[in-house]
Length: 181
Image 1: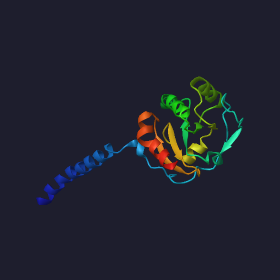
Image 2: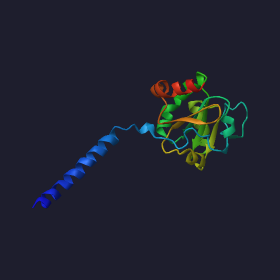
Image 3: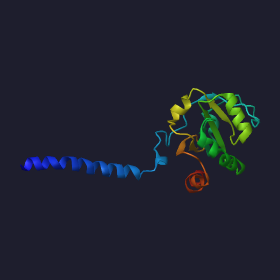
Image 4: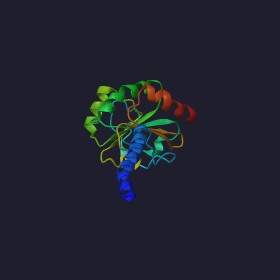
C-alpha cells in the first residue's frame, strides 16, 4: 500500500521540477546569448562591398583585416528585417557621433541593399553583401539585427542581439567600446 501512495507523488514531483525549470527559463535575458566567437578574431571573409553613394574609397571588396586599427561595431542587417529598419536611424546617429560601423547585409541582394541605404542613409564605413549567408553562419548569427563590438586587433569582444537603441548603447555597448578605447 505504501508503494502505491509513493507512485501517486511521482507526477507531482515531475510537475514541481518542471515549474522550477520554466521559472528559471523565464528569468533569463534572451539578449545575453553567449557567442562562440567571443574573444576570437572576426572570421575570415572576402565579400563584395555594396556600391553606395557614400563609398569614397571606391571599395569593390572587403575582408576581416579592414576591421583592424580601431574599435568598431559590426552590424548584421537585411532589408527584409523589420527590427533592422527600426534600428537604422540610431545607427545613423552613432555614425554622426564618429562611431565606426561596418555592415554585413545578410542574405539579400545588391539592388535592395542599395535602395535601403539611399533611402535610409548609410551609417556604415562600408557594408558587404553576404548573399549566401556564409559569413553570418560563421559568426553564429541567428537573430536580426545583431551587432558585434570588435577591438583594434579585430577580435570580437561583445555580441548584442536585437535592436541597438539609446538604452542598449548607453547601458551596455558604449561602456564596452569606451573600455576598449
